[in-house]
Length: 127
Image (cartoon, rainbow, N blue to C red; front, side):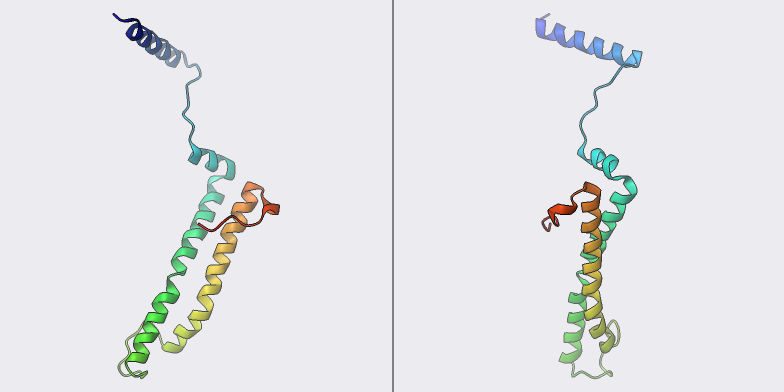
C-alpha cells in the first residue's frame, strides 16, 4: 500500500475517533451564518424585506404611467377606459409611490449601517 493511501486512512481513523469522542469538529466558514449571528436574524430579515419592498415599489410608477398613456391614447374619456384605478388616483400615486420607495430604501440603508456600526462612513454604494 502506498504511503499516501496509508496516511489518508490514518487521518480518516483519527477523524472518526475524534467525532466519536465528541471532540472539536472542523467547521467550514460560512459568511451567511456570520452575518445572521452578527446582525441577528430578525434585523437582517427586516432589512432584507425593506430592500425587496423598495425594489417592488420601484416598478409601480412604470405600470401607472403605462396605464395613463393608454388612457390618453384612447381619448381621455371614462367610457373607453378600463385601467387599474381612476386616472386622478393614478396621478396621485405617481407622487406618493416614489416617496414610499425612498422611505423603504432609507430604512434599509439606515438599518444596515446601524447594524454594521458604520454611522460615520456614509451610505453604502447602490447595488
